[in-house]
Image 1 (cartoon, rainbow, N blue to C red):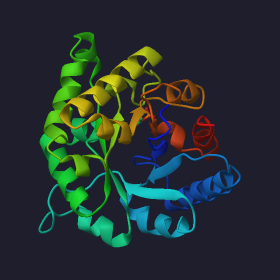
Image 2 (image 1 turned 180 degrees about the horizontal axis):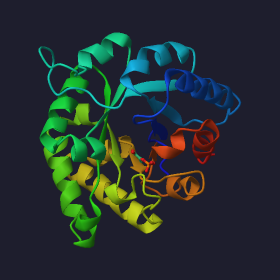
Image 3 (image 1 turned 180 degrees about the vertical axis):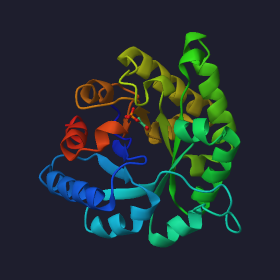
Image 4 (image 1 turned 45 degrees about the horizontal axis):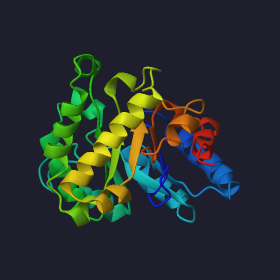
Length: 256
Ligand code: PEP
């Protein structure tokens, strides 16, 4: 673990939890985090759009950051059902997940739409968490590095160094998301180091040392400690295990 990079644990709630369940989970987390004075890891929660405003108010005096799970790739206009980055900014939202594999798989989102969303997020000073990862078929065919490089090149490497430094990368092997399968520590470290090398080649060592690269894919309280102790893993993007306050808190505590 490099001490100069931000350590981040982020919960992606996906399409789970009612408003009341969300508020209870946040209240429990606020209490638990307040008791953990030594922990310097940044905590992000990505709830449903319709709870963002309420949860922003609930977390106002705390260290918890609230983000959105997605945003439109258009800036404004006649796009029924969409939520723009300007709307997110107007309620005080500070982060957004972009290119999550479920958006890519079920809603045909691409590296190109991700790039458009990242540009809009950067314009509004919202931190993009750019999600990348290979399928099982791609890994079995040993194409994982090619796929990740393409996702970086087409989705985010058009940014200048200053803007890129403001982003977070989440490496989430698709075969590990929600499946209970986790990348081995060798697979995780190998890919995180590969991503950091690509950032060094494109920008500089300095930029590569500033950007946090999170691991996602069945990360839980049992494996978080081992994963977070890898030199190029700066935290986790957590799905299922972020839905219970105790489980999520134990993952945050894996940083101690
Ligand atoms: C995710 O969807 O970003 C994720 C990592 O999910 P899970 O932790 O449930 O595998």
